Amino acid sequence: MNLVLEKAELDIELQICMVEEGPFGKRISHPLVNDLFYVPEMNSHYNKMLAHKKEECAKALADGDFGAYIFWHERPWRAEKLYAIASQIPAKDYWPLVASVWMDSENIWQNKRLWKKLLTAKVPNRELLMKPKDKRIFKALCKEEVITLYRGHDGSKGDPKGFSWTTDYAKAEWFARRFKSDKYKIESKQVPTSKIIAYLDGRNEKEVIWIP
Image (cartoon, rainbow, N blue to C red; front, side):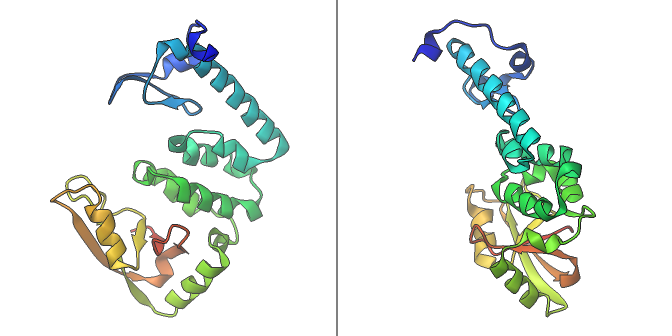
C-alpha cells in the first residue's frame, strides 16, 4: 500500500517505453516492466521493480546463470534477450534454454526471423532441445521419409507458414477454433522428416517444429 501512496516521478527509462494508446489507455511496455494498466500513483512501485530486476539481471550474468537472466525479463522480450547473449551460453546449455523460452513464448509469430536464427544456430547437439521421451518419439517419426503435419490458425490473420505444427489434427483444430473465428483454417502439409527440427510434447500438443 505504501508503494501506491508514495509519490514519485516515473523513471525516464520507463517514460520512454510508455505506450499512449494501449487497449486500456496508457501502458508501460519495457523489457523488465510490462504493465497493461498504467497507474501514475504506482510510479514508485514501477521504479523499484525496474531497479530490482536490473540488479538481478546483472547478478545473473555475472554468475553465468543465463536462464535466470532471460526469465527476469518479461515474456515478449525473452527470445530477443536469449539471442543477445547466445554467444556467451555454453553449447550444453544453449538448446535446453532455447526449448524453455520457446515453450514459454506466446508471440513466436512476431519474432519469426529471430526464432529462425535461434533454431538454426550452428551449435552442436540440437537434440538437446528435446526431453528423453520426446527424443524417442522424434526418432520414431523420422523412420518415415515424410509425415503429415497440421497447423490451426485464424484464417483472417493467422500465419500458415508458422514454425509450430502438430501431428494431432484435433489439437490443430482446437488452435484454429480457440478465438471463435468463423474464418479459421487448418493447414495440412506433407513434410520430409529431414526438415524437422524437434518434437516437443511438454504442453501435450504433440508439437513439431519445422521451418516451411
